[in-house]
Amino acid sequence: MSAEVLPYTVKPHPVTGLYNGKFGIWLFLASEVMLFGALFSTYVFLRMGAPETGPTAWPTGEETHLNWMLGGLNTLILILSSVTMVLAWVQFKMDNFAKGRIYLIITAILAIAFVAIKFKFEYAHKFHMDIYPKTSVFFAIYYTMTGLHAIHIIGGVVVICYFIGPGAKLWEENREYYTNRIECTGLYWHFVDLVWIFLFPILYLL
Amino acid sequence: MSDAHADVSKHVKTYIAVFATLATLTVITVWASTWHFSHPVAIAVALAIASVKATLVATIFMHLKWEKAGNIWFVIALTAVFFVFLVTIPSLVHSDKPMGTVFTSWG
Image 1 (cartoon, rainbow over the protein chains, first blue to last red):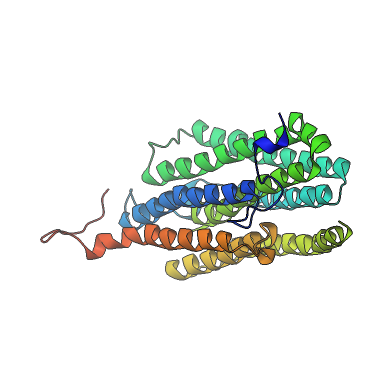
Image 2 (cartoon, one colour; image 1 turned 180 degrees about the vertical axis):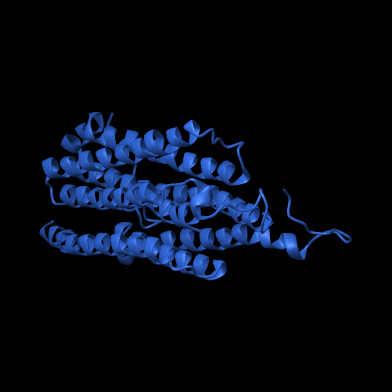
């Protein structure tokens, strides 16, 4: 299969001014904003409708049973993974494949650490305390938003691992194309980080 | 190519500085949540810090600062308009209720 099958993988498209992958990922991110936006909107709606006091009042602080230290640690892990992702792209851009791949591996490890903390220490602890989505309105939206976000992290890990492993063959054939695909992966990855930046305070702190 | 190399390698310091800023702002967010503000103020402070962090991620890590293609800006502007519309829908509950409806919280 020749590279001509997919046009404008490296050179910018004359109409959009971007290579096609980048334009595509930005359109995809726009749809992602609407997906998460609907859930943020739901959160606002549920929180506004919750009574001030009583058993169905919106829980805050310790009432949520959420550990802000674990949430904060995961925030730092994701921020760090964003840096390693962008540094991987820098290395590929500078023709340094070996270093770039190491940064990708670090990114994947950090992402797996995030998911491990989320499932092993947070969700497992909640299930142990008999806290499920049906427990309260707060936990329904908590599990929905963090669950959807965790699925995005897992999806990102799969893509990053692909580019560490079998997808790396592309580097031999077309370095710029490979570097561009890493840039698109990075754009997605930073977006997932950006969503968590909002999820952390609204669920863990407020 | 060498110009491009110099360009991206110059950004590395910026990326590290942004990471340090994001980490500091995360600590400040947690610290601010212990200040016992009234609830609306606490929400405003937390969302303001989160917005600063999100802007840093979008402009530096997602390269929007160096992005010249107008189409990306068009996509973002359009998304922003719809996003604002989406998150303001809940407030319509208070202003556009059928006559005779008494708005109460559910429980």
